[in-house]
Image (cartoon, helix red, strand yellow):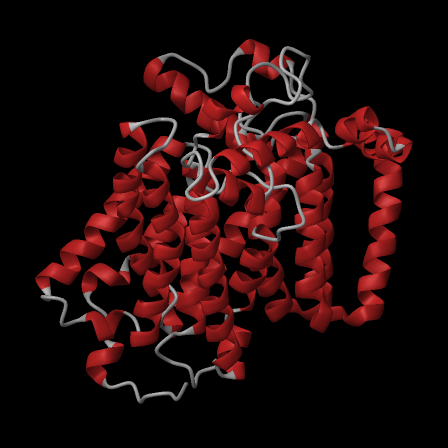
Length: 440
């Protein structure tokens, strides 16, 4: 890809798009309040559409490069078309069609997200802002680890009580808390996965500003929080993030040292933190090599994956429909009526990317995901070295999030679907920015 000179008209973004970083940062900062985050997403989508309509779409080249427009749209379609095709005979009926059509709201928001990192100024604001948010999340969780209270969640909870008289979480949910919950709260245990997913932005900025020392401090701080969050999937995600981001910062010897620190920290956590001990013991139960031991180690995921295989056999073409897993689970449960590892009710999703895509959207969906992945890889492969360097934090975050050998959260849920699309748009915007000739 060759760079084109930036004229005054291409460099001068429209007023509405100068606010693109603010929409992105507000959306991420409001993760603990999903209703408000969704409101920011909708407003951002409307702002993008209004701006394009006012300029009669003639200002498109001032907002994103041509390849960025194309790749953002292709990645969205690779995600959205499987949902659309799976909705026609979904187990949830007409509701699935309605949800897939409503998901079109993501596309203009993704254009907005990509534009938030399309120029040097916007990029500095957005990437540094994301790093700051992640740093605050980590500090807040460390305070909770020491004091027992998350200042951010306490503030959000107090504000909600003032507004409607009801706390964010019930007394039972608070009493059942068995891990570090941080800013997300005890009734929304996503701290570990969210922090691990967005950690690349903090690690990248720390390395850029303070070198090896800054990267190490950030890596250890976030690592402690991820460990205490008790999510083994988050442990794997963060290990991938450290490997990807630390390779050039500290080298393979530094990574080996970090791995040793991680093992020592895990051992210390095993001795000092009952929740960590519980998860390590559960993982080690797989060594028994019997079905019960393996399923216990996987927190019931062996049973869930068997059910996913059943759904794939019964609905191979376009699946049971996105978010239809819970409704189809009873008919495919290999152990109906027996106690489940995850608590009451059916399994909500397949907990593994490939199985989720195949079970919910079928072979059609998997082909679209493969096309999206190959297209993104080719864009990265043929981009200039400076562009790949600039796109590193989003690339690391996206790769670690969709790593297919890890257990995963629901990619077609409202939360993780929006996170995955957000990271995709940041990747495109950073990789295919206007100013390819500029350094990050």
